[in-house]
Image 1 (cartoon, rainbow, N blue to C red):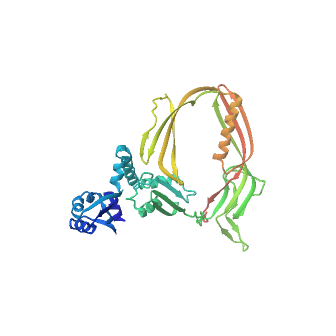
Image 2 (spheres, rainbow, N blue to C red):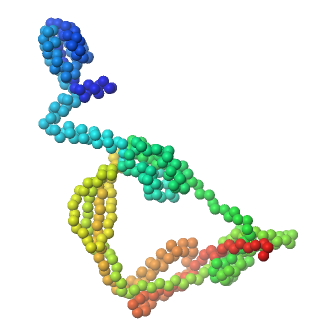
Length: 392
């Protein structure tokens, strides 16, 4: 293989030597140190191959041996370059392409992560990027074992990790740690009390003596489940009470908004700027000098995909959107929509564990403001644990 590669780069010819004494031609070329191969004798001739640089030296040897040489075929890089010499851009482009492929083969083209369920892939990519595993990262200096160890130390939720760099693709496989249930290891006895006023709807007691009934009203701080249990032997046992006590609880939420206000929105005017990228290199593809007094920016990327592999080559588009200030006068209908959206967000994000039993909304206008008063009835767990001392 190596010999064939050397012959290709040096260039060689297949030729025929015709004459009365072709054997003498072989002896003379050997004496001159001229190398030839694939010699095949025939009647009054010899077929062989020789480097093009040696072929230019055999004229004297051919004359002394009384033979005439004729080239049958030409092979190798020198003839290819000479053929396309009038089109100099072709060999230059081919050489540049080979050099570019050799250079790019030393870098990571894309990073894929599998096995992440609860851990954010963005967080994993950020930690890997700090350790050199990123698009455009130089792969030859990476210590895979150190990267795995440092990433697992940085992200405690990862229980096992494997970094595989195949060619120009970095494949990350992870397994998350199994979450252990939180156990109450405290042995101090405690009572379950009410954290707010309410009407009991359901009691799920796992340990302790229940002190209330379904349908009874309780006030904040009332005892719901006692940690003191009387045994059959008329003795007292102190335990850590454990229970869930659900009750209907009344809440009031108030909010207000201005009837006239100014807000910022998109005008619809946009300016696009495109950039071609290769690994970390970027080249502008469009020129735009438009600018706005107030604007927001966004960016999207479109990578070239080959055989389901995302290549670090594509187009990035930056969008600059114009912002304008608009004065708005709210009607009561507009205010109602705003308040209802606000209440929905309140229920979903601020009270995710509570069930809405009732909701009464009252909206009125005072001066230049709309006011909203909402009376809620939530069904929720009102139990909380309070430890006590046996010596008290």
